[in-house]
Image (cartoon, one colour):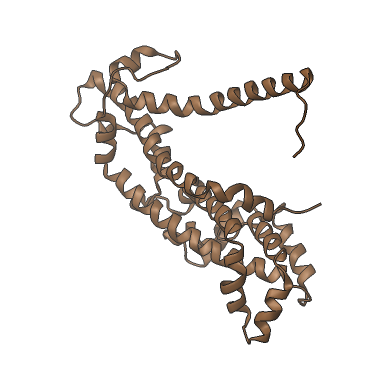
Length: 296
């Protein structure tokens, strides 16, 4: 084991590196803590705070969470989002894995040309109007499937999986073929189990992307609030400032303060599930990205 001597310049670099990382952590973490503290604060105290920094909850009040969770649109948005994330992630993983398996095999007819066409979609698209017309013509508008099928495959994720699949030794596939295994058996019993770290990373990418998306829902689910995902409900509350349905019964003078607390509470409610999932796949994150990285 080689022990590096701690020279003054190296020590200064390490101190600077630690201070810089602590600063980045603070910059990243404070907005989240601010939202959590504001959602737990007394509504009138929060309104009087103005735009000053908030370092701890001003009192302790869970009324904003109670009002937010009692709102039917939030519960409906949660249900729709959970369905879209669960089904969408599974569909996207299945289609992406099959596409990556095809692109990673050697001596496949027209493989190079198809790969170029697929990569072309990373940089160019037909535009918003042709995209909407295509979804409308296959009769998906007004359905939750319009948020799953049209965007089921992400080219970047497919390339990550393709690189991971290509790194698996050919001898394993050849041995399976000698035993009579077909493509589906090789994919699901050999390739996918060996690439589970990369699959976990791609699944996280898909889940976070689907959870945070709202634009396609606003495009394809116009006038159908019962099918809106949670992020579109959140947008309606934050941008359109529609908290009237949750402040019913409150005094007119208190509605503004309660509305502000409700906004922060809904941000926490909509963010918490995806934050809870991340620690379970974090151990695969670095390994999966490095395995699926394009080697230079």
